Length: 435
Length: 105
Ligand SMILES: Cc1cc2nc3c(=O)[nH]c(=O)nc-3n(C[C@H](O)[C@H](O)[C@H](O)COP(=O)(O)OP(=O)(O)OC[C@H]3O[C@@H](n4cnc5c(N)ncnc54)[C@H](O)[C@@H]3O)c2cc1C
Image (cartoon, rainbow over all chains, first blue to last red):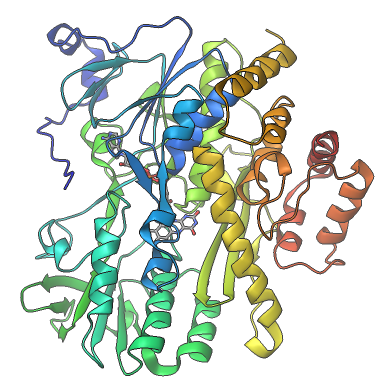
């Protein structure tokens, strides 16, 4: 598997400004075309959207996209694989569409950034020079947060919370298919903030959807490090109606926080020492920004990167714009839609700055997160974000919010429509990233 | 470079590079999508062309677009989600959206 463990020493941009020996050490420059150079790290929701948007709107700009995998497996709709309603190829996207638009795809890991020389160093020590850098590397998993949960353990208790090469979601699917009759599926759900607030609960729903058809005496124990979650009322209403007592959600206040696991014994251990035996375990660990954002000192003590809400320029390095899950975007959720929406503002701001213009004013950042609760049963939460008088990101008052609640007998039409709209969202957003 | 010549270059390049998108979409790209309309592409397809169950909004008459938006905003038109989205935009923004989508074919 394509693991990422570069031996990079932690260096701070502040210290770098004093002078960098790095440029001298590795002078190889990957490309030297005329025209401004926009380099993008990460070919996911933020990065692919940024690269495509830049090529369409600024044809004179050279765009290089650095991404280690040869195709992108989306996390969105991964839960539908668990529900038996999608196959891996349907959520795997090629970079050929971006290539056809003239994006230079460099298949490699970025391992360092020199903000003074304005160069990215790749895993093989080649360097890529930039005028503006967009960083959208997504999340990293805090392997130290749950005792006993490391990369090796994730082969037994998959997280399936990063697309990668698709193996994580495939392991979890196979384990569900092989679950003994009447077996127990455990989930460990992290505290805020984390990637995709409704994601774990859509996952519970889709696992239940699978079990109800193929293993109806099985049980889901969902251990949560929180006492509440996104679209909670709607999810719980749907669970009760569709799956009865197949699902048990255990909040933090009822000892739901999982602090340790024993993958060999297949045990989850709670905060108060309770040992829960599971047959299949999906551990979604606490998160922070991906390594490239932390090891370079872009992230602060929280593990996430502070950015200017108007331009997404990193606090420590004005020519580096950090978008997607890696930044501190609250109250915006860490969602693919937000990554896509903010990617465009970040690129437009970066190019404007190169041209000596000001960034687009009064931006609107848009989000809708759909979740599938069952077959023909979709729910959503929407929000329109703007900058408030203090320049901070805020949801637009009296707008957005969640789908109406109510029993299926009243809401069947809306639930079916929202499931269809969710499919339309998936196809539209991936077109806006990769076509 | 003017916005128009820039947009034309983008379109010409798109055509040159061939079959990655239907010709209609490549032509639509010649009309630069304003930032305010970028979010729409997440559901309604490229240049408002529609996608699956999400209806086409390209080519919507300007006045009809605004009237429909206001009906969503006032919850006077059946909706699952546009009635939540519509109140989040100002009149000026809705007018800009209407201008843009009504220009598209
Ligand atoms: C189960 C699940 C369901 C979800 N459902 C939805 C949904 O319905 N709607 C929604 O809007 N969002 C959803 N999300 C959230 C969405 O997946 C993320 O918010 C989104 O992927 C964030 O985009 P990003 O660009 O920050 O990161 P990513 O999309 O993860 O992209 C990061 C990319 O950077 C690459 N990378 C990492 N490090 C480096 C490096 N050093 N050098 C080069 N490349 C690097 C990675 O390989 C990856 O391709 C879901 C998430 C999960 C887990």
